[in-house]
Image 1: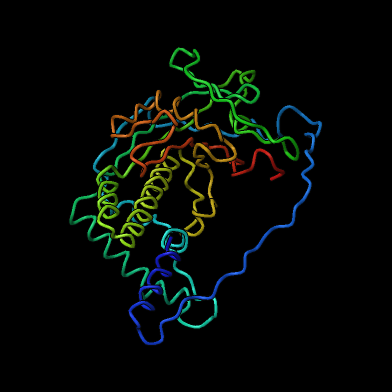
Image 2: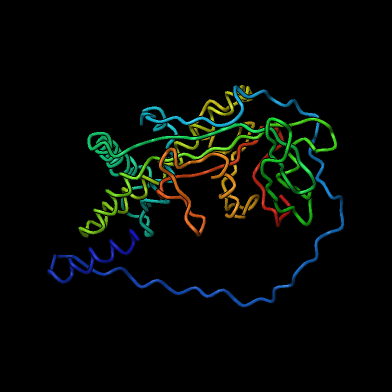
Length: 323
């Protein structure tokens, strides 16, 4: 999108006769050579991975759900991933020719000043309504299923996760106590949002043809929701007593150098978006203004949900791969 804006700027400059204005060179179209896809059969192997089942099960501070509203920007702004914002959302990058400022220079001259300006505006215009609903539930695993239990030990909800067909044959269910152990485990669920006002503001910028501001504010709003999710995830790990080994630097947090992974619905380990309906039933996120569409999308868009595990071996993996 930002490349498109830069092209339009160049076109206008040429049209107006600005001295030295030129259009960028056309990029060569790259076409991948065709290849024959051969479907591999899953390897024969154990029904369950080799993950441990004797790790300590933490005691949560409460069972059930809680709602937290009025979270201040200063509490979660430090969790903002500037790299994802500047590179992924705002398109800051060094010129292909090698001339001009480096990426690091662009961050200092354009990225951070623009970011500070937007954050000040968000607070001045009161556009953020950060809120969380989260909870802890007793659970057990059975095969590829994670079964959440009520206080009486009856099934409350059930999630079925995919299993790797080869390699370690990992499945999210393996990171919880198996039903036959006679023990129960604990799982965390969370839904976070920065509210609808910021989305309304981005829509207003789009309608007024302020496309650069729209793209910047929209990208920032998405990353702020993710920062809030990271902030609350850290709080959950602290409440479960597994945050002692957290890295000192934020980069280490983004590389998941800690115990207790957070899995968002739609990603490889838990790809079924329909499971969002189960989380919505358990957490009732409408209490913080978040609703689920018929297509299992969260509204406002600047919202995320997640399943939080405490198992020390839990990591991110592709259910169809070897990792």
